[in-house]
Length: 393
Image (cartoon, rainbow, N blue to C red; front, top):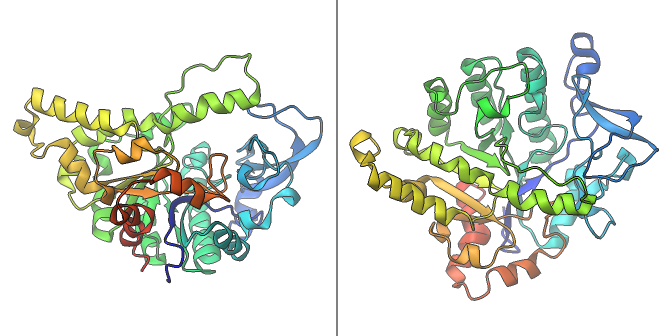
């Protein structure tokens, strides 16, 4: 792939079309449980304004998956506050869901390539509401559709695979290996399975439980990067005041959600997983980097104070994370320049087509963000790290 603009988005979102699951899952076996669009009365949510109109929504296993709209694409809509979600499929701009139309939007914004995370109805953990068989077939349908429709359209797309959880570790590993065979370079998973599944009928082991070891082993062997996105299922939000208007609710939730993994990184460090699988790499998307310095300092402090090198954690936490953790940012200025992780571990993202996206003015944002940074570090952040990590060129 040719690098023309000098920018790769390490976090964007691919929207599958209405037939993606229907055409790949057995109607006779799963019926209306299959993820599909259906007309319904507008669900009430604090992030949208009430309407009496009949709308469309994604249904998964008979339940509405995304109450705000049919696609998470406020950056492509005309609402200047970027809180409007299209209410019917006919409103969704083709650049959101059509891979070849999306290429035009990439050129408009000066982006060479995108790493593709999910969009509704396939956000991480959504299929927990079904059973193991249903979850696996949904995951396989998603992984097939994304690779066939997006990667098949252009090598400027780097899709990330979903994984199943409910059928046991052997089923998880089997799908990971199948995804690698299809050409995937990474997977998206919830950060803490036992927390993410809370509220459902399922009970999953803790992230640090040895039962997940085959997943780590296979991802290391296959050179698959493990990704967490935004809060990655780690729920740490404080209560939101009932008097807020929808725009205020958005503004209250978004900054807090992006730093949720500050509570999880220490679990990754002190579980010993990084030490046991030293070639396994992890990436944190849509979280920014400004919060990370305290976490690195605190982990180092605890490691020293409690002499954890005597308990098998031989390498200082910040050094271990420097070897294995990648983080992403898209608008920060001071946070990215002062990050204790080297520039070789930071990647830029546009978050297209979500509310915080820099589209269609990404290069203006980049100019402010990286002003004064040495050119070699800017290149690393903007495209070289992603190109190397995902084997793009």
